[in-house]
Amino acid sequence: MKQAIVARADIGMGEGKLAAQVAHASLSAYEKADSQLQSQWKQGGQKKVVLKGESERQLHELSEIADSKGIPNALIRDAGHTQLEPGTVTALAVGPAADDRVDSVTGDLSLF
Image 1 (cartoon, rainbow, N blue to C red):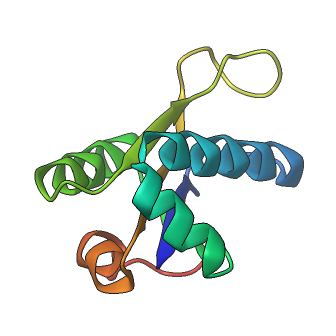
Image 2: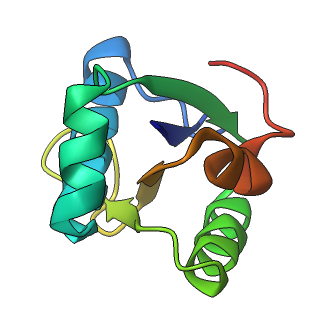
């Protein structure tokens, strides 16, 4: 079991902003998972990987793929209080789900 968080590398988020957006994505996708997936992931150590995203379009496409496979996912839009314009898509979390299911969506991406 794991979760992959794809954070946009093309919008120049500072380290703190990046960390916050990754955290938002992780929790939001976890909340969309059913109780069985939540339990399995928590018992397995809540494995996560953070990957580089290239664009807003890419994150939308990955979200659509995850949706089509029935994998919980969450697309995050920034509120715009600090570094970014309101509504900027910053991150996408895919999972928790079985490693191979998450990899079927995000397996071609590089680590952040």
